[in-house]
Length: 92
Image (cartoon, rainbow, N blue to C red; front, side, top):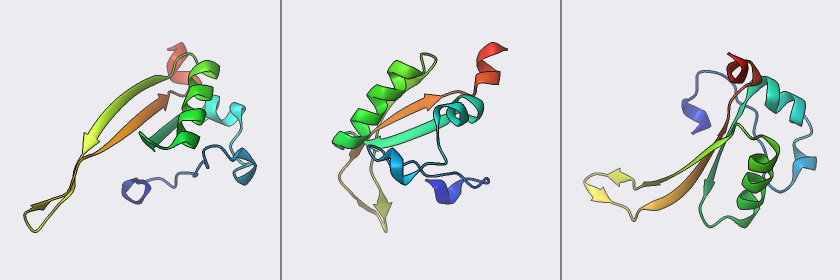
């Protein structure tokens, strides 16, 4: 998904925050965060639980998508999307 964004998003390695030291709680509060995870990824589930507990304004939704190529439809895959809005939008 990051390939389609006009800005340059910073990746977050779920379950391994030491690999992404540029992302801390202060930055998440300031800029917000979107976490997209396959439903069966346990590391991502851990990160989601932490974000929901720590950032109470967060919202979570599930989505199921399937790819189509040359008329062939792939099996659907379920994803969880967690959104932590920037602090400035929470106070307005």
